[in-house]
Length: 171
Image 1 (spheres, helix red, strand yellow):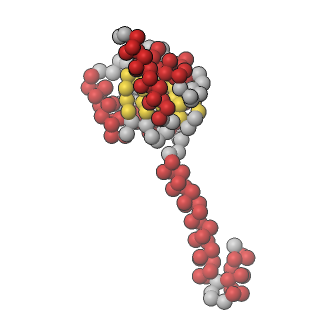
Image 2 (cartoon, one colour):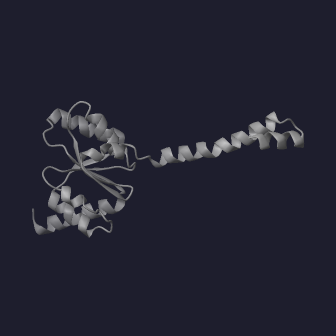
Image 3 (cartoon, one colour):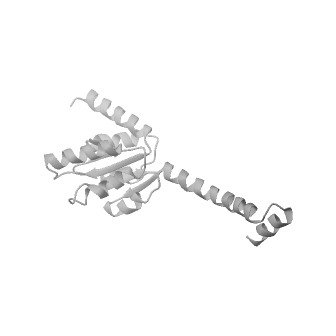
Protein backbone atom coordinates (compact mmCIF):
# COMPACT_ATOMS: atom_id res chain seq x y z
CA UNK A 1 0.00 0.00 0.00
CA UNK A 2 1.48 3.36 -1.00
CA UNK A 3 1.57 6.45 1.21
CA UNK A 4 -1.12 8.07 -0.87
CA UNK A 5 -3.39 5.03 -0.49
CA UNK A 6 -2.80 4.96 3.27
CA UNK A 7 -3.51 8.68 3.49
CA UNK A 8 -6.76 8.19 1.56
CA UNK A 9 -7.84 5.32 3.82
CA UNK A 10 -7.13 7.46 6.91
CA UNK A 11 -9.17 10.32 5.44
CA UNK A 12 -12.05 7.94 4.66
CA UNK A 13 -11.94 6.45 8.18
CA UNK A 14 -11.83 9.95 9.72
CA UNK A 15 -14.94 10.89 7.72
CA UNK A 16 -16.70 7.72 8.89
CA UNK A 17 -15.79 8.46 12.52
CA UNK A 18 -17.07 12.03 12.18
CA UNK A 19 -20.45 10.78 10.92
CA UNK A 20 -21.10 8.26 13.69
CA UNK A 21 -21.75 8.36 17.42
CA UNK A 22 -21.52 4.59 17.81
CA UNK A 23 -18.33 2.65 17.15
CA UNK A 24 -17.62 -0.88 18.36
CA UNK A 25 -14.28 -2.64 17.99
CA UNK A 26 -14.50 -6.42 18.02
CA UNK A 27 -12.28 -9.44 17.47
CA UNK A 28 -13.79 -11.89 14.99
CA UNK A 29 -10.61 -13.89 14.39
CA UNK A 30 -11.00 -17.61 14.51
CA UNK A 31 -14.44 -17.65 12.88
CA UNK A 32 -14.74 -20.01 9.95
CA UNK A 33 -16.11 -18.85 6.58
CA UNK A 34 -19.69 -19.98 7.29
CA UNK A 35 -19.81 -18.32 10.72
CA UNK A 36 -18.30 -15.10 9.35
CA UNK A 37 -20.92 -15.11 6.60
CA UNK A 38 -23.66 -15.60 9.21
CA UNK A 39 -22.25 -12.71 11.25
CA UNK A 40 -22.18 -10.41 8.23
CA UNK A 41 -25.77 -11.39 7.38
CA UNK A 42 -26.89 -10.72 10.97
CA UNK A 43 -25.12 -7.33 10.89
CA UNK A 44 -26.87 -6.42 7.65
CA UNK A 45 -30.29 -7.35 9.07
CA UNK A 46 -29.61 -5.34 12.27
CA UNK A 47 -28.42 -2.26 10.38
CA UNK A 48 -24.84 -2.62 11.61
CA UNK A 49 -21.91 -1.93 9.27
CA UNK A 50 -19.12 -4.47 9.77
CA UNK A 51 -15.67 -3.94 8.31
CA UNK A 52 -12.18 -5.20 9.05
CA UNK A 53 -9.69 -2.37 9.61
CA UNK A 54 -5.96 -2.02 9.90
CA UNK A 55 -5.16 -0.99 13.48
CA UNK A 56 -2.51 1.62 12.67
CA UNK A 57 -4.72 3.36 10.11
CA UNK A 58 -7.73 3.43 12.45
CA UNK A 59 -5.54 4.81 15.27
CA UNK A 60 -4.37 7.63 13.01
CA UNK A 61 -7.96 8.33 11.96
CA UNK A 62 -8.98 8.51 15.63
CA UNK A 63 -6.17 10.98 16.29
CA UNK A 64 -7.28 13.12 13.32
CA UNK A 65 -10.92 13.03 14.45
CA UNK A 66 -12.56 15.81 16.45
CA UNK A 67 -14.00 13.27 18.89
CA UNK A 68 -12.35 12.17 22.11
CA UNK A 69 -11.97 8.39 21.94
CA UNK A 70 -10.14 8.26 25.27
CA UNK A 71 -8.32 4.96 25.79
CA UNK A 72 -10.06 3.24 22.87
CA UNK A 73 -6.93 3.26 20.64
CA UNK A 74 -5.16 1.09 23.25
CA UNK A 75 -7.32 -1.91 22.27
CA UNK A 76 -6.12 -1.78 18.66
CA UNK A 77 -4.04 -4.95 18.75
CA UNK A 78 -4.48 -8.14 16.78
CA UNK A 79 -7.49 -8.68 14.55
CA UNK A 80 -9.90 -5.73 14.71
CA UNK A 81 -13.31 -5.35 13.13
CA UNK A 82 -15.23 -2.11 13.25
CA UNK A 83 -18.99 -2.13 13.84
CA UNK A 84 -20.99 1.04 13.22
CA UNK A 85 -24.72 1.56 13.81
CA UNK A 86 -27.32 4.26 14.40
CA UNK A 87 -28.63 2.71 17.63
CA UNK A 88 -25.99 2.65 20.36
CA UNK A 89 -27.01 -0.76 21.64
CA UNK A 90 -27.55 -2.54 18.29
CA UNK A 91 -24.01 -3.95 17.91
CA UNK A 92 -23.96 -5.02 21.58
CA UNK A 93 -27.26 -6.89 21.20
CA UNK A 94 -25.98 -8.48 18.01
CA UNK A 95 -22.72 -9.61 19.64
CA UNK A 96 -24.53 -10.99 22.68
CA UNK A 97 -27.06 -12.82 20.53
CA UNK A 98 -24.37 -14.20 18.22
CA UNK A 99 -22.29 -15.46 21.14
CA UNK A 100 -25.05 -17.82 22.20
CA UNK A 101 -23.64 -20.11 19.49
CA UNK A 102 -19.92 -19.59 20.17
CA UNK A 103 -17.29 -17.52 21.95
CA UNK A 104 -16.78 -14.91 19.20
CA UNK A 105 -16.99 -12.03 18.41
CA UNK A 106 -15.20 -10.57 21.42
CA UNK A 107 -15.81 -6.94 22.30
CA UNK A 108 -12.53 -5.04 22.50
CA UNK A 109 -14.04 -1.64 23.13
CA UNK A 110 -16.79 0.76 22.15
CA UNK A 111 -17.55 4.44 21.76
CA UNK A 112 -21.27 4.92 22.37
CA UNK A 113 -23.25 7.95 23.53
CA UNK A 114 -19.97 9.90 23.84
CA UNK A 115 -18.64 7.39 26.40
CA UNK A 116 -15.80 4.91 26.03
CA UNK A 117 -16.18 1.29 27.10
CA UNK A 118 -13.10 -0.96 27.23
CA UNK A 119 -13.23 -4.74 27.44
CA UNK A 120 -15.61 -7.59 26.83
CA UNK A 121 -17.01 -7.29 30.36
CA UNK A 122 -18.76 -4.04 29.29
CA UNK A 123 -21.07 -5.88 26.87
CA UNK A 124 -24.03 -6.03 29.29
CA UNK A 125 -23.74 -2.31 30.05
CA UNK A 126 -23.81 -1.57 26.33
CA UNK A 127 -26.84 -3.80 25.77
CA UNK A 128 -28.70 -1.82 28.45
CA UNK A 129 -28.21 1.52 26.67
CA UNK A 130 -31.61 2.68 25.48
CA UNK A 131 -32.09 3.69 21.88
CA UNK A 132 -33.67 7.02 21.02
CA UNK A 133 -36.95 5.31 20.09
CA UNK A 134 -37.05 3.44 23.42
CA UNK A 135 -36.45 6.67 25.35
CA UNK A 136 -39.15 8.52 23.42
CA UNK A 137 -41.58 5.68 24.13
CA UNK A 138 -40.82 5.81 27.86
CA UNK A 139 -41.19 9.60 27.98
CA UNK A 140 -44.54 9.44 26.18
CA UNK A 141 -45.70 6.76 28.61
CA UNK A 142 -44.67 8.90 31.58
CA UNK A 143 -46.37 11.97 30.17
CA UNK A 144 -49.60 10.07 29.44
CA UNK A 145 -49.86 8.68 32.95
CA UNK A 146 -50.70 11.98 34.75
CA UNK A 147 -53.10 12.98 31.98
CA UNK A 148 -54.93 9.66 32.32
CA UNK A 149 -55.18 10.18 36.09
CA UNK A 150 -56.73 13.63 35.65
CA UNK A 151 -59.19 12.38 33.04
CA UNK A 152 -60.24 9.42 35.18
CA UNK A 153 -60.59 11.73 38.20
CA UNK A 154 -62.78 14.06 36.20
CA UNK A 155 -64.97 11.20 35.03
CA UNK A 156 -65.27 9.54 38.45
CA UNK A 157 -65.96 12.79 40.30
CA UNK A 158 -69.14 13.43 38.48
CA UNK A 159 -69.96 16.49 36.48
CA UNK A 160 -70.14 18.93 39.41
CA UNK A 161 -67.25 21.19 40.29
CA UNK A 162 -67.25 20.11 43.93
CA UNK A 163 -67.08 16.42 42.95
CA UNK A 164 -64.15 17.06 40.65
CA UNK A 165 -62.23 19.04 43.30
CA UNK A 166 -62.91 16.36 45.92
CA UNK A 167 -61.69 13.55 43.62
CA UNK A 168 -58.55 15.45 42.63
CA UNK A 169 -57.71 16.26 46.27
CA UNK A 170 -58.01 12.58 47.19
CA UNK A 171 -55.48 11.65 44.51
